[in-house]
Length: 404
Image (cartoon, rainbow, N blue to C red; front, side, top):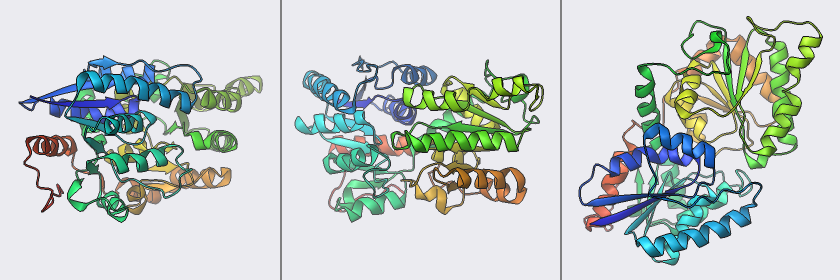
C-alpha cells in the first residue's frame, strides 16, 4: 500500500488541505498520514476540529517569539526524523508557509517526491509577501507534481522552466473548503458571542458590516499603523457601518490594533457620543474565530478589508467584494475579474476605495457579480486522482496531463 504524507502547520494550510485529506481517505490502496508542525497552534487546532481531522503526528513546534530561522531549523530537524521513520511514497504540501518549504526540503533530502498544492502563485517581488514569495519559489524547484489553481499560475511555472507535463490546473482547494463549510452552517448559522445581536450572521437585514483581517509580516510597522488609522477614519465617517476585526494573535498585530483602535470606544464614551445601532462603538475587536464563524461573517459582510491571501479567494467564492491592503498580490485573477481591488497601505487610498463601496451601490454590485476564477469546488478530487496515478505509475509524463 502506498503512503502519502500530508504536512502543514497553519490554519490556512489546514483549511485548504482538509478537502485533500478527506478525498485521500476515500481512495483504496492509499494510506494518508497527516503530520502537523503546529506553526500556529490555537488557530490550527480550530480548523482541524471543523473538518474532523486528527493528525497522525503532531510535531508541536510553536514557541513564543521564535524567529523564522529558529522555526526553520526546528522544522527541518523534526521533519527529517518523521520522514525517516514513516518513509512515505509522496509528500503533499500547500502554499507558501515556512512549514511547506521545510517539508518540501526535508522530503527532497530523503529523495521523496513532493506534490505542491496551490503552486505557481507569484508577485515577482521576493520581499512581498515576505517570506512567502521565496518559500513558494523554492518549493517549485523541489516539487515533482505542481497543482496550479489557475492558468495564470500554470503560465508562471512554465516561465520558470517547470516541465508542462508536471503542471496540472486543478482550481483552488479553498473553494472546496468553503463549499463544505457553507453546507455545514446552512443548517444552523453560528453565533459570535462577542458581537451584538444585530451583527450576528443570521441578521441579514441589520446594519452594514465590514470584515477586516490583517497579519502580513511585510506590513508590520508603519504599514500596519496606516491600516489601523484608515479603519479609524472610516469608522468615524460612517457611524452606521460596523467594522468587525478578528485580531490575529501575533503580537506585531495585537499591539498596533489595540493601541490605535482599542481606545476609540473609551474616547467616545467620554464624549458621551453614541455610535451605530444600540452600541457605543462601531469598531468591534474580537478574538480569532473558528472557520465556520469566519465563513458566516464573510457571508454577512458588505465587503472585506484584508491583507490575507486566502481571503482573496474565499471572498470571490461567496460573491463578497474585497479590498486588498498590500502593495502587490500573487492572486491577480481576483483583480482581473474586478472582484477585488489592490489598494495598498496608503491611508487615503484605503479610505477612498472603502468609501466608494459604502456610498455607491453600482460599484458594490459590479464587484459582487465577478466570476470566480478559482474553480468549481472539485480541486481536491482532481489532485488526489493525479497523485494516485503518479503512485500507480500510470501518469504519463511524456504526453502530459492537464486537469482543466
